[in-house]
Amino acid sequence: MASNDLKPLISHLYTADPSAHVFNGKLYIYPSHDIDAAIEDNDNGDQYAMNDYHVFSIEEMGGPVVDHGVALKAEDIPWVSKQLWAPDAATKNGKYYLYFPARDHQGVFRIGVAVGDKPEGPFKPNPEPIKGSYSIDPAAFVDDDGQAYLYFGGIWGGQLQCWRNGTYNADDYKTMENSSGNALLPRVAKLTEDMTEFDGPIQGVVINDPATNQPLLADDHDRRFFEAAWLHKYNGKYYFSYSTGDTHYLCYAIGDSPLGPFTYAGRIYEPVVGWTTHHSIAEFKGKWYLFHHDSSLSNGVNHLRSVKVREIFYDKEGKISTAPATA
Ligand code: FUB
Image (cartoon, rainbow, N blue to C red; front, side):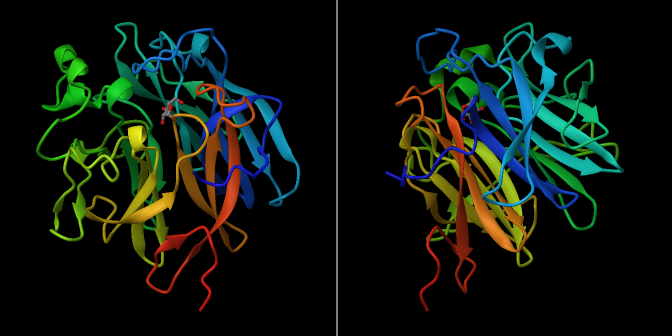
């Protein structure tokens, strides 16, 4: 189990799935806003019944966390029926973009985008989801050359298994994930210059086993992708990190291109209190941080989570550790 001694960053609300970015020298956190809708836990994730987003900011690590209030709510998004799950944000062309997954009126998860003039919002949602989008957990990455990418996907309740062939097949929901062969791949697509549509095809994000240089297998539950994609860049390399879901690890893989392939590189974090684990990684004022959540504040209620942060470190080979290198 990961250390649970960290204090939640936010304790007046339940928050989860923190996506952290530095905009204009300030650290912003875009989390899910957990609520108790009195729905019993199931593998479909119905208990995660969130219906708005708050944005938070921090001037100095360890200093006060400012809640900027509601930045977007479900009732203002025409295509959404329910479940505003893990969001992310990006900036380009002087605008700020909030990417979010939710179920449409047919119960299918799609990814929407909302646009604002300030990092904290408010954000105005586009009336339709991103064309061709599906599943959950969008994570945006803008490379140094200005090209933006959106990573996404989540199996089980996140419905990625319904999109094996690029079109929605509701019957595939019950298989939850591949039972043999290669693991289901997270997805990535380039974003258009205006950041609101996919530019080109959706591609699978290949995570290779370093021992075989072949994709990770479906039965490798300790290492295969489940949900919570995140992409960051360190020393010219691309780090793709994610949750292994039912084995509750945060893992990462390293590659030479934002489109992959990536090579599995290890675990960042051990299981926390609560079923889900979901994170982001950001550099702020010269230090690197892992933002994540656990359910310790709610005494273990899976859908009532709290965002936490801890510093992380890289060794000489670029491997990530939660402890400083000793030599
Ligand atoms: O918060 C709802 C879902 O739980 C997220 O989309 C997943 O990543 C998991 O944290």
